[in-house]
Length: 310
Ligand code: GDP
Image (spheres, rainbow, N blue to C red):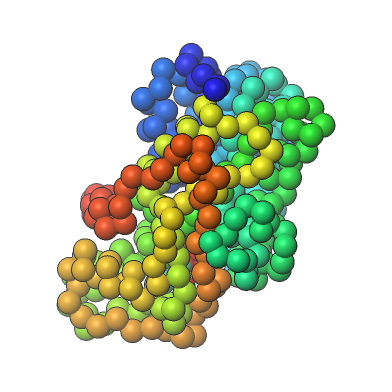
C-alpha cells in the first residue's frame, strides 16, 4: 500500500479529459496536487521539463499528457502522434527518475494491442502481432512509454507502473467534429442534427466494429487505486468489461439526444480495429470495479457538451 497522503502529486496533462478527471479525484485525497499550464511548460522540451522537475520535485507523477485524437486525426498527422508523445514520455519519465519521484503512473491505451488480438484482450497480448494501421503511430509511442517505465524498474528498481485504459468518454472531451473520438463526435453530430431538423445523421464506417467505453471518472478512480495498491512491472488494463457495436451505440446517442431521424453509415470512412474489449481480470482481482453505467455516463457527458456551447 502506497499512501498518497501529504505527497506532492504532479498531474501532467491536467487540462485534458483524463488529467482533469484525475485532478478531481485527487481532490478527495489529502495530498498536494501540482499542475502546470502548457503555456508555462511545453513537455516536449527536455531542458524546460528538467528545470521544472528540479524546482518542484514531485513525489508522485501521473503522466496523462499526450497528443490524442480519433481515427481520422491519427491517420493524417502521424508525426505529431509519434514524435510529440515520444518526447513527452522520455522527458517526464526520465526527469521523474532523476528528481527522486517515488511512484509514477504512465497512461497508455488499449490501441497498443495487436489489431487481431484475442478478445477479451489480456495484457499478455502486447507485442504478439501487427498493430491497427490507423493508429500505429500513437500505439508505437505508447508502447515505448510502457517499455521506458519497465526499463527504469529493471535497471534502477523504480516504482513506475503503466495502465491501459479502454476507450474513454466524459466531461472535458474534445467535441471537434473531425478530430474527436466517436462518443464526442456523435454527441455533437446528433445534437446539431436535432437542432437543424436534419433527416439523417452520418456515422463513419459500417457500424459493425465493437468498442468498450469507460467513463473518465471511473478511470480516474482506477488510477488512484493503482497508485495506492499496485507496484509491478506488468501493465494493467482498465475497462468496463463489455462492449457495444458502433451502430447500436449510435442509436443510444440518438435516443439520449432525442434525435428522431435516420442513421446512415458512411462506408468510405475507416472502421479501425474490429473489436477492442479488454480483459480486466488483473485489475478486478486486485479489488477494483467500475461504477458508471454507459447510459448514465452518456447522459452526463451530453450535459457537459451542452455546457460547452455557451
Ligand atoms: P478507435 O477506437 O481508435 O477506432 O477510436 P474512435 O473513437 O475514433 O472510433 C471508434 C469507432 O467509431 C470506429 O469504428 C469509427 O469508424 C467509428 N465512428 C463512427 N462515427 C465516428 C465519428 O464521427 N468519429 C469517430 N472518431 N469515429 C466514428
